[in-house]
Image (tube, rainbow, N blue to C red):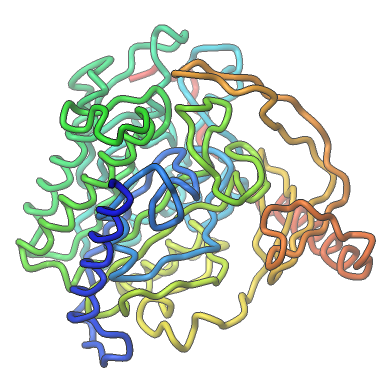
Length: 474
């Protein structure tokens, strides 16, 4: 019955959207720089939305976004939280700006060498957009440094409400009290996480309403479905498929609430909304982890399941309804794309992203255009693999894989192995099962040479992160 209702709902959405925004219909020119909303989830897998094939999670609002706009099948984040956020904020591969790994406050032994943050000398996405007159607001998880100099209000955001890092960095795991910030000051500690998604949604609505008469950029970074998982009362056991599905459905509801408010305020047709995830699913958590869909491995790896994520873009009147892009794109591309759409100047320092704004404004002329640059799969500062067209080459590196899954919030275990020199044709083998390096030796040699060149360039060009002396957790 649930699948039948889902199908009927989606068909209804498609009929309405097709009537309002028919493919091939001449679209209106943008009315000045658009409002920009970027929604980032934490640890959501490629296979965790019904519009990406999930058989157990019902996401009607995100399905509606995809039906009304553009769905990507080859969009990439990076293997873990902080590197992906650095890529989004700077348009750079994570090691270029000194954020190769997850960072965090003092705590367990692994954090001993993670006491750094995004350098305030970097030009961030909100700083760039502010030069073009945008109001800038962030709600949710930051995770790019917890010192005053590295927090959102010092990195270009006019407004901030949320957490400085992940929701599992709690006292019971050896960390300090988890603060909730409103502006530059903590207003609560160790919050009731069942309220987080509700709080984030409400503060996002407040920011939109307060800035409806000017161009605005809202960055909403949900803390979930990163474990530990919590939902508000309205979504508790709603899915009948476990708490992970409940959490994702609450996020879907949050998206629906924001889209409805844009329509109410008359901002819908001048607002680009993008939804994606910061990395693949945390597979070792089993029934409280997500799904990588058809792809191999998950979070923490440079196999497709660790970095290929869902990405949906909606902009009524500009993006034609029901389109799908198979172009390779990434979080690093958002920075130059928003620069173009927001009529802002790029910084003088080098960035790695490519402007993909034509995918939103001139879709039929750009969807099948070849990518100009190779895409690099960085993990911990190392270039593990590269993709050029549909070819992907891994050079030898260690990777983790799940040896046994956990259950009900208890983490399972990983094993570790080293890859060989592995070449995959992602067009026919997206699951990376069949190594064809020996079958195509010339392609293997060609891509290996590109990896060696790009790694050497990155090592020579990378910039430094922020390393505070005698810093204290705020």
